[in-house]
Image (cartoon, rainbow, N blue to C red; front, top):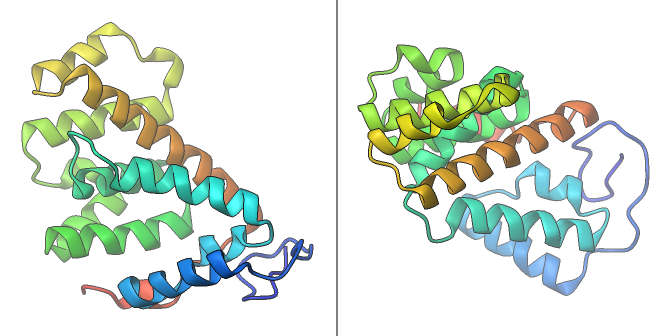
Length: 191
């Protein structure tokens, strides 16, 4: 998928059309806020409809109203991506965990083994659930949901934990299948 805007993945097909004004504006906002346009967005830009669907879902899950903080959502992204060994998401979301937590070691621990991190019981329960849902989805049952409730999560929070977990399981597979590479800038952020 060669993208005329940047070669970020290795499948070979062309964009349906040039970037729309809306997409150009969105990319400009990314550059302003993040200092870069994430390669995942560039990869999806081969088709404006797919890019818009991806960004709408991402923005809702990761930035929308929730009982989960932005950091907690990023922590889920890293734990899921660690199990799936998704190079793109580990790099990008590991950098986000380092930035949001102000703790470079936390980002690295979550990448390598989240159980090594000194987490409060509520975050530990959240990550245990996300990991089980990723590694053994068919084994998730009511005691797993109850463990989240016992740790202080509401049923709405469980919905959000499950949706963030599911989203990153999907994106990990797409990134891995297409050999999507993270932006070089992520590697040195908040070290």
